[in-house]
Length: 220
Image (cartoon, helix red, strand yellow):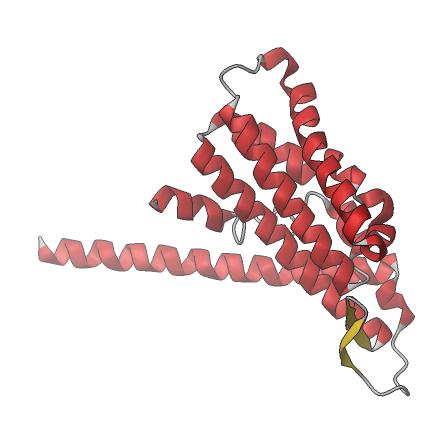
């Protein structure tokens, strides 16, 4: 259980796919203009990443190494198709907003990268933990980014045709926030903040280890 939790937590902090590993950025910057779109993109990535990791891990002993990448893509594409058809049927506005980025989840570096780097080499349980952790870490970053961009850029946050929060009508947001240059600038600050937090946590771990070592030495 400890290994499962540790694997899950890596995707939230020290191996976050966006702020640390910096993979899957194209879709992130493209769909993070609206909270609603980012929210459902995050759910889609969690579902596809977790399910594909589970299947690939379960079949890893029978998948020939020479053709593993095409098989990974077939497995991932199957779950992406489920997401695509489900959104098309039940969430047409979200489907229209996300557009081509839904089928492009198939080639998202986050999905394919974790299949190759982790799921293919570990047990089903750990593969599921990795998929959930990486998916959750991805979703958290894209939702925070989209929330900031939509609120600052348009002065409101809309979810399922309902205004969650809105500034006065006189508010005129900086348009650059909703454009790619603004996305890069904001994301840069998010990366810097994530790196600062990660380094601070690392220093705490080192200091704690030194303190424990000193105490153990005194005890001896």
